[in-house]
Length: 251
Image (cartoon, rainbow, N blue to C red; front, side, top):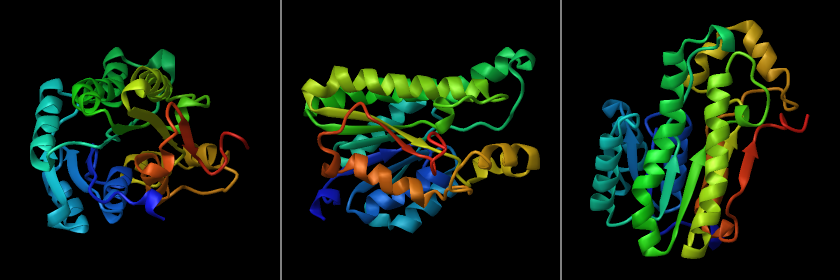
């Protein structure tokens, strides 16, 4: 269907070196988009670029916890692609679980800086460009932890809940100027970022035991919904929280 094609479109995907970000970048390119690949691991970004094809992808390495690096990443992406139509804020993650009362402030701050502050800074940086063009789709990747109780991961859940809330507010602020903003909310996905959970039998049973489909998602199962939010198929969709969780939040 032409409503799902992205021929002539351009996209910036953060966290594109592996997992969900790589799958989204590859899927956008498969639909015709030229993609700027943001992330810290240059070698891994080059692997994503190779999976897409050098003619349709450009590597724009950046540490999204550094506002200056974000500004450089966006500027480089626009310079390389000419403009941006799609921005996917995917960079994020969490590598530890600890009760709230035992959490160190620096641990809390580190997780919010990666999962929330980076999204804020990317949105702040691309806003003048997208609003000036009068079009665009911003997709902020959150997590099902934003919608359910997450004992031991309150830091991550709080950050992702804020991403969902931010997406709604930006959608309303930007709608009249032609820019859409939606939150994409994956459930539990089998990537290297969830290795720590899958290596802990008790934690894995807790997480997957609540999923009606009874398994981890693959990154590719998140990429399809991202294409929908990027494409004209979702032209009248903004401020939406698209949950892709195997039934977790309704089970």
